[in-house]
Amino acid sequence: MNQIEIFNETEKKIEEIDTMYQLLEYAAKEENVENAIFNVIIIDNERIREINRDYRGKDTPTDVISFALEEGMDIKTDFRVLGDIYISIEKAEEQAQNYGHSRKRELCFLTIHGFLHLLGYDHMTKEEETIMFKRQELILDGFGIKR
Image (cartoon, rainbow, N blue to C red; front, side, top):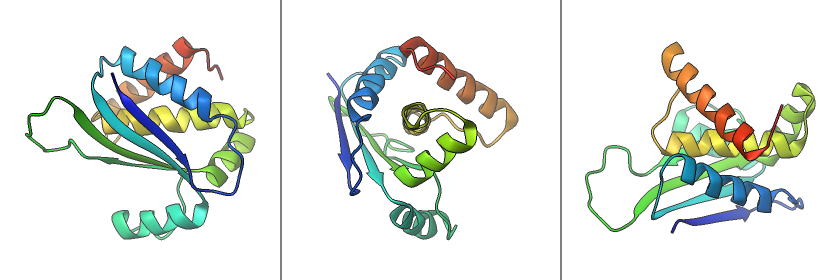
């Protein structure tokens, strides 16, 4: 059993939280993730800009940042502490408009993108990007979130 928490730290009403939660449960099954603990925190552009500046050296807002806690750890426990995913609701809304799809689709995309980062997927090389982005689309399509 996974423990997934989604926190809305903004003033905005986020009706998509239930869908995001169900999507993460689906993705965890698809990725064979069991007994994991992780969080999704929805924040505003100012807060994600601060996080991006402090942890990545980039003083600009971004859409999603993941902090994978398992990376490089060799601790044996009965559960996995995967980490935290931070999503900017303002960036999600902006990108949804720019890409011509719903806020729900964008939030789901960013949620899965962040989740796959927690699992060790990356997109630093073209090969890694191809693998990660294909996996994202397979999970989204399988859950019923289409472009």
